[in-house]
Image: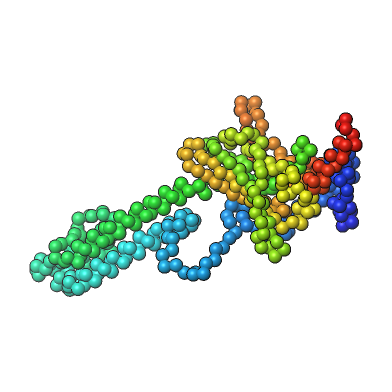
Length: 381
């Protein structure tokens, strides 16, 4: 299909758009399919900036006047980092504490003279020397003693004496530091296990949002699936339209009104579809298929709920750019009843599956005007 044919199909009057759904022939249907194939190829090649990635991560960088902070939020860094980096940081923290106190012990014993050849453990019996710490030969034995104090292992061979008050203070400080560091690590690990972001990985949004007709109204629909065995209760779905100006600067944010296909009391046993009716209160009311394709906007979607088995909150986010909104599609059914299994089966491989349906390409406003004019012309219809 060449460019004049596309423009003629996009810019046709309302009656032609309605005929696309009601009385289209095979030739118009083929044009319709070729247009959407062209849209899909175009969306794959075009890279568009977005506020929220499909993974739910925000594409934001916060700038401050004072870039450097004396005390950064270390706990947040540990929790937000990947597991491999958290483990590496934990190991490095322990090693740093052990080495730091080993150096302190070395200085104390060096000042006291415990490393003199005549004061080493094998010569203590002849010299009657009382060291600060028994059975210390070199830096390696001091490092092992630092680990024993930090972890409160206490093998019994290397023990503290009453000779050095500074050694007693150092032992108390290292014991306190060991308790604090272990509590810190346990808290970080527990927080990473219980953070809602981890549970959100089992909640899936459909790759694309779709627009089709429902009861003579254009509707934008996206689908959410729960792959967990435990249900999500007290769930809520929100959607926000984010607009940009010509310079890709954030211009406006509007909350979209949503309805759920199942019911308002959602137990999330089956995949749900969130529906935004494009009516006179919708920001999409005056936009046609071509207008949405050319628009610089993004739809941010959020699902919040509570895990039934643990009572922990969970939140998952995603977004749809204009290239990820498919006009004239509908979702394929995912839930089927299997006689051999005597129950329902949810096929999550079909979460993103859609099929083409005949849908007028005009805006919802022009569509409603057409139905009103038709009602006035044919009152009995």
